[in-house]
Image (cartoon, rainbow, N blue to C red; front, side, top):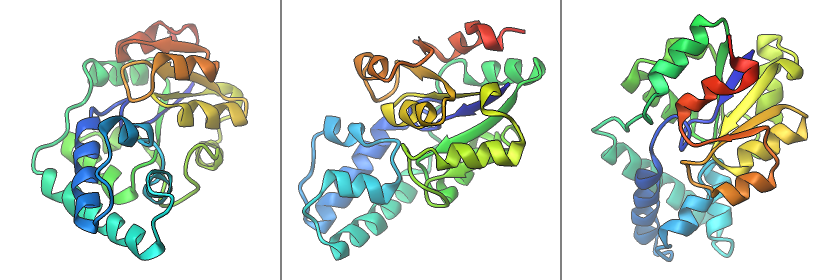
Amino acid sequence: MLVILDWDGTVCNSEARIISCMQRASDRVGLPVLEPAAIGNIIGLGLPEAIAELFPESHSEQRQRLRDFYAEEWIAAAKEPLPLFDGVLATLDTLLCAGHQLAVATGKSRRGLNREFADHGLGHLFPVSRCADETASKPNPLMLREILAETGVDVSEAVMVGDTEYDLRMASAINMAAVGVSYGVHSRERLIDCRPHRIIDHFTELLQWSPLVA
């Protein structure tokens, strides 16, 4: 089976850094410094879409400056690699040993994902990935369609795993199975509303979902 993973909030524990970088960047631009919950809500979207959602009355120049400052803040904060959630490495290894394929579908930029791959030495595990700056942002399912096309896997043999309604909604749009993770940025209640096939509370519980059991 093809297991397609979201990154931030699913594989990597990056919520706090995303929030702090957005707060600092918006302050530099002169936009309101929003509460953590508001910023956490848009994690998973592409950066332009996230900024438009957070600051709908901002003008194009402000949005571009915010994108630039956010990138600067992220790079400045990236001296230490972000932690992976507990059990991620062992679970990925078990999935691969069982014959499953892995891919990533993320709201990160390609530059950002490649940096994460390099920091953790994981790039070789994910021969196929899609980022929001090279295709349509979630919840548009285009990145999932592109991953299926590149791997040659039928939608019936794939699952999307993510911590936000954006992940689950894009899977639902093409009738792909979906597993929600409760430890990320969106509440269990929001995930339930998207009717995933399962919700897990720890990454290792992915191995208990029957289609992935060897």
